[in-house]
Length: 227
Image (cartoon, rainbow, N blue to C red):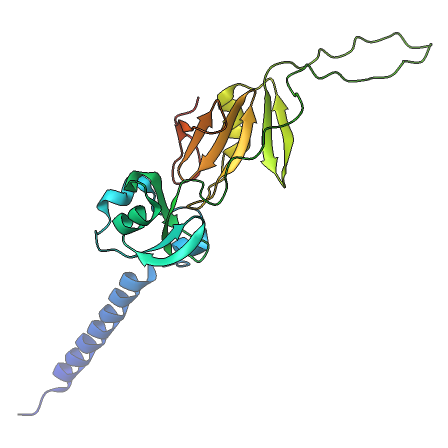
């Protein structure tokens, strides 16, 4: 049966409305989404992604790059790597190595403690201001800075970072924003105390040999527990 002219007109208008509605829905569903740049991979970000606290959640059969005496010895499970090193699994640092692969190594295996500084930094620092001209009144010299020295070991030598800082302030000055990889360590000194940054924590030692945890480090390489 033939359709009247009015009926055909209504059908055409209805079809057009349906097409427009479908296009509008697609724009609404897709236009508001902005994927933006893809997040950087753990290897691109650098720093640590998996640390010792996460080790118990690792699959027992998970293969890691194992380091013994500072040397890569092949793939091994965490337990096997600990056995090869002659230590408990808790003595291994776990994280991404320089290749971006998950690795395990004894704490500070690549960086033993350096020699202690052969000079004293704990004496108050004085500043020579010279003699003022005769036409100018003499000004009092600034008060000397006293207190424990905060030192950083870099390039095979000790360098002063500050003096008169508290222990916590020295740790922040040395290590805030810095992370190290498994087996690595960065050393510092606060007075007579040796400090070292290892994966996810800073440790301290009174004898430059036996270290204990001073502060935990978060994934942003900061120390929220330090005031």
